[in-house]
Amino acid sequence: MNSTQAGQRAASAAAEAVQQATGRLIGILNDSSIALLVVVGHQTGLFETLSALPAASCRLIADASGLNERYVREWLGGMTSAGFVDYQPESGTYLLRPEFVPVVSGAGTENLARTLQYVPLMGEVAPKIVQAFRTGGGTSYEDYPRFHHIMASESAAVNDASLLEAILPLTDSLEALRSGISVADIGCGEGHALNLLGSTFPASTFTGYDFSAEALATAAAEASGLGLSNVRFELQDVSRLDISEAFDLVTAFDAIHDQAHPAQVLKNIHAALKPGGTFLMVDINASSRLEENLDLPWAAFLYTISTFHCMAVSLGQGGDGLGTVWGKERATDMLREAGFRTLEVKELEEDPFNAYFIARA
Image (cartoon, rainbow, N blue to C red):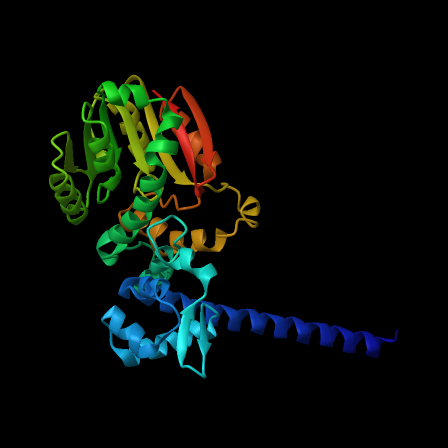
């Protein structure tokens, strides 16, 4: 092969690589657009309607959903082009493909339409994130008005399915909870997990801490509706929690990595536990090393949500900016540095997204 041929081959390979990169970007453009349509389908109840209907006309689907027919028709066009919906032009009917039913509808953990709600949420704060790249700093929790609700809906699905049957048994605390112990939940958000525990174990007492008054109002309302007298919620910056040897069990569900000062929070949790008490920390199941996350199916999402939320809100408070993907290695190091004497890290098949850290004071 002469130099001219070699140059032509190199140029051809470079052009093909650019074409592939172009195709990748077009795919991302389509998929991110579909994500927005999925969020609309989730929030309007269209997926629930479609999952309950046979092949139906747009008018019937709109009427059954109580929605505007013109918007529904355009949305169905997008869902059809995305492969979620089958369209029969002869009859003018639409049918949600059966394999998509469990992953876009229902209350189960398989419903990923809930998770896709983070996509438009991140888009709303994009200008502030771009500015933070230039000037430093970050965002505040007030910049994400629906974050607590989205997080709560995701957590509720996991907790309703697994908290009592699979998660709590990891701590060996079931008998103690039945007999009566003192429990705290750090970063409790809308409090569903704590209310579930409170209704299941009436002999135990439960305290939820969070610094979102709006989330705590929702938590307290649910507790009141359930008639729970053993559950209470307190407005508290947990980095300033000053309680000594008060709790037998402390939990934190995906709440540590976005704290402004996570190391201090972990030390405060250790101090709040009675000697021999247990800390159950549920957090992201990933590695602290980038190269070990490249095969993780949702790795790109983790780094993105960290950039747009978890790291950003920490830095916005003048915090450490630990980030979503702090990883199991760094998490275990920080737990030991906080004073915990024994530590186990476990995983659950039904929740591959999270790792379960069981630490003893």
